[in-house]
Length: 478
Image (cartoon, rainbow, N blue to C red; front, side, top):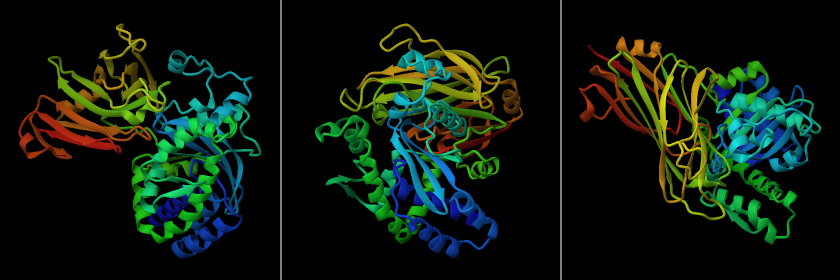
């Protein structure tokens, strides 16, 4: 399994180096030579592992991949707004580009003679009643989102020359930023891109800069092909030169869910799930927590939002426990071409059986003094509560949900144990997490442990982050 991990990481590194935003450009035979000569012969001895590599790279039969650019400066539940995509076919280790374009082109010109009703918040806050490919990642579970992406992509006529899509690969611009920290700046048509300016500069060029260059709207994202080619030329050698740095980076990007995979084949998907590379919402035999934001029509404002997530539990006099999940949004931006008022439809995912008590901070629409409607439902084995909030530039707002934990979790706590799985939203960056858990019993041990000055009471107080999924376990005495 260790060598299998090496195989997948090398494949991922090559995807990063070759793909950029899903835009491929490579000379025939180069990738096959790199993979076979540098990887298969050097790192792989197990025939089964070589076979897996051959399948992924299309040596047994051609493979088709749908590659999604998930812009995490415009957050969506499944990782970020799908601003562009690439359709790639791998045949005997050589990639063939089938289609490259911005999602707006497919959504505006593709087929519309099919039933596809958008999620209620998209219809309400974006005034878009049809569910388009660009909005397909509405679920925070990447496998669910990918299935909808493939469904809408095919229904809208985006399949082109491919008969089937074997897998979906999603990644955020944070991936390229981190790669450029290792590699250094690259120049495209006289423009320098580096780790600090990459995302903002690219967004400006495809949203505004193309006009001054006399580029047509439908061709504005073609510059990414040049970017991909430059990355390919540099990274296919730099990866092996700085192997350890890229290896460590890839491990971190996978943990931080900046790169995620979905395979249509159940056996391949099970490998991805077992490695925790599938962006899957997990089950837990104790408490569960996941917050998912959806930027609805507020430009790229997530880049200016600082988030502080807090979660508290406290006992009642009736053997029940009340939980409060609260997100603080600190808007550090201003009104300009990139950032605006933040308009967010947020959902918190909690254990099935949780009962909503109330909520604060939600709005019916922006600037409204009327409290917003709180929605709820069940998805991927979890209860969720959702509401809308708007935050003005330079202001701070909070959205919270209060609910009773299910009886089975209350019983576990009463037996002296508690565990919590807190999952990170795909593509999200820099969320602080504070736990304030009071079980009404003295705590005897906890993992991770509190600061020593917090020992000896009934509370578990801890401040950390949600850069990756976190697990917590608390043992209580009598």
